[in-house]
Amino acid sequence: AATVNLTIYGQEYDITTRGLAVMNMILHGRETSDIRQGDVIAEPQFLAGDTALQTFDFVVANPPFSLKAWSSGLTADNAFGRFEDGMPPEKNGDFAFLLHFLASMKSTGSGAVILPHGVLFRSNKEAVLRERILRRGYIKGIIGLPANLFYGTGIPASILVLDKSEACAERPIFMIDASGGFIKDGNKNRLRERDIHKIIDAFAGELEMPGYSRRVDWAEIASNDFNL
Image (tube, rainbow, N blue to C red; front, top):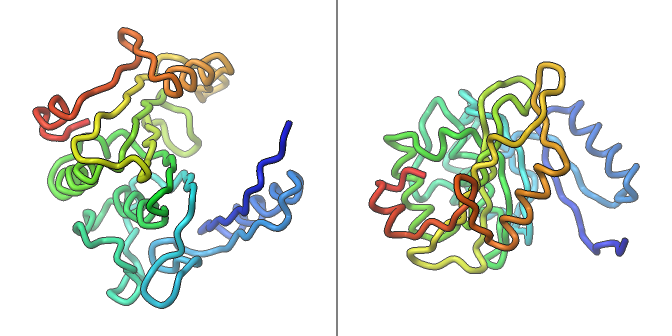
């Protein structure tokens, strides 16, 4: 297989997990990657000067779900323009992480982030933020995953596929409900190779399959009050 010429940067809050990530990079021949430790909200490690985050071509992330104390240590000085569209709820960090990742993407950047299903439909402050992100055209697709995939939680999550390069007003969103395709593995659920292939084939080809995937136009999203 052809090697892809990538420079890898990463940040992880837990020092043990950060150590595992560094080891993983070495084992995969990526020893030049730069994996740092710290809280991405209060102490983002990759900065472009005093007031802005460094930006990247691709961003992938699996942040902690619905973190209650997400704003601990956040001040006006370390906000780095991430919350100009509004502050996420005090006791739920899902949108804080989403805004961080969007701010970490170049104008030509793309990304994918795993977040709880609640980000798609919760109301109040999150509804305001969701509508603003949608109006900017930054969400390309949503892939709903089976419940009980991740350690530490049984709640279902989804992959938000982010894309700035083709951002436009009234952008349609390609949605996949992949929540039914899995195998039980001990007390967790697991995606099989065929489940993963089905998701990728549908997404890459924008293949519409009844009850599984379709392109949802802006008018329908707006008429549904931006509930995804």
